[in-house]
Length: 213
Image (cartoon, rainbow, N blue to C red; front, side, top):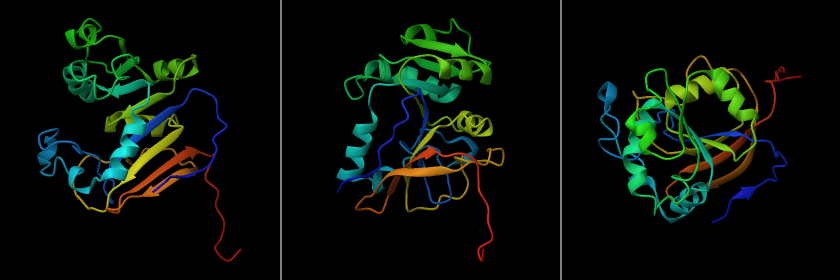
């Protein structure tokens, strides 16, 4: 099983949003039962029963060297885990980690204890980082941060894993503040368990027309 791929000629530094979502857009706690039970979420770890060899190969491909932009809660979980498990994700400890937070202090042990970690405060900081030279910036989890990126039209690519499951309540990929925009499909695959893995890149403003035009 292979990706259907289309060449991407965009060489600029991009912000790439990764998300594992249900059919109704829930992205909360995909990886573990106790990962995030906030709001009374009862279905943590819902991804594992729907993964297979094809799915895992895509995940491994996505763990490429990059820089990372993370929300406060995701950063806290990662900073406690990945420094001790770098053998599974070799690049995660070497890449720059930018954590967007108004609460975390710049000398917080989580920040100083995980190399290449930097605290930023505002959307303006994200825009400045985006304009610098370096690797693409990947966003994992961090639903509130993702909403902020969509609101300010800062997400250049989406790498979605859409699972054939409805979860109802839970943190979702999109809220009502997202800026309308077009995206173009660049790669896609359907796994043996029915997970649609689809990559999109931003493609300008939304266009409208009458169906019968």
